[in-house]
Image (tube, rainbow over all chains, first blue to last red; front, top):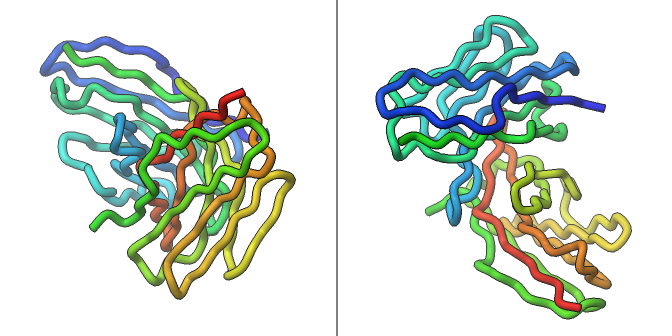
Length: 113
Length: 109
């Protein structure tokens, strides 16, 4: 079974803090993704990485950065958290071919106060 | 225009009925299409994938794809209370996988 693990399920951070969300997958997948999900807006792509050290902006990259130093790990960084970044964050991974199934982690619920 | 649009819910169907979910996409070059189910508070899980025009059946689920009309649908036959969830349409183009906002289905006993 593919396992995508998000290290933090529930976080509460203060405005202006730097926040790290970590994601690890155990199936040697090339592609990894970060989405955020908000009511009525569905899943919106923040960043994706198609291989180690490679990254591409998604639809809403502003206020976020990512790091992929190892194949199994994809980190999302909020440089200076703001209240409008309160959301559920989903990490996902996929074997390299674009039509393959994408597997999600369990999600990280971030509240910025 | 949103890349992926789904019919707005919520959709309420009686147990045993057919639930019909629709999705349109804007990028004609899209190559593969997926339906995910998401229970409240959980992450999405894959129900169906479809890559070529026509119908694809898997148990009580049937996905339909019409690339000329840029349209993909999901039928749930013999709906059960356990089918109550939000259904997400996802469309793939190259590396990017884009999702619709989802349609919430409630199956009433």
